[in-house]
Image 1: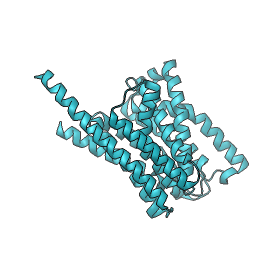
Image 2: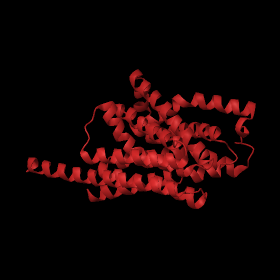
Image 3: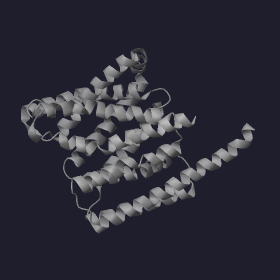
Length: 307
């Protein structure tokens, strides 16, 4: 069991580490614009999924799921949400807003909790209410410092939070590979239309796939596995480690994104930004401590029943 848990932690760290380094991949794809990057990410993501399904011989399972209209409908909603998330994220990290994108993923766990209350009517523990309240204060502080609402952060946090909520409805029947395949199947027509429009109009620099050198071409193709591999690692990790452990590792991605934004891309960090981030981190500390406390209490309650 310890060996399985260790493997799970390593998988989670690699997954979140890859997500944290994603801004560097998108920067390396210059001069491609955000819409072109997202379009190729979808196209080559589906290609990678097809190869992975062939290697794992899971065509029958995927085809059976795709034949279920309800499942495909839910995955269509998930596809729209992840398209919004990808587009906002790529646009942010390629236009000097990586720090704001990192903030979105810091507050995402708190948004997920809030959505659970509003949509699923879940009950929160006092510490969870405290964490949500602190995060609202953080958004207000950052908005005052910016002179406007941090729309990029909120768009990323809510789109991914809603994406997780939708995926939860089919989580027991749809595995990670089949889910990503169905999402990209929905999105490929949109991606193809986007590439045609970009190529014909030249908007945002047009399509640079075959005109920016062989290295650029290789990097673009790699967006497929770069999209799929972290998701598959995450899904495998989730089966091996506890939710509290998995929740702790999720902060690795926005920490790395913040470092990329500040250290590599030299984005400014005003005092108000540091204060806002500090308040968010306080909320996350409260949330993390509460999750470990609740998990420990649950184990103590369950222990007498197993004796």
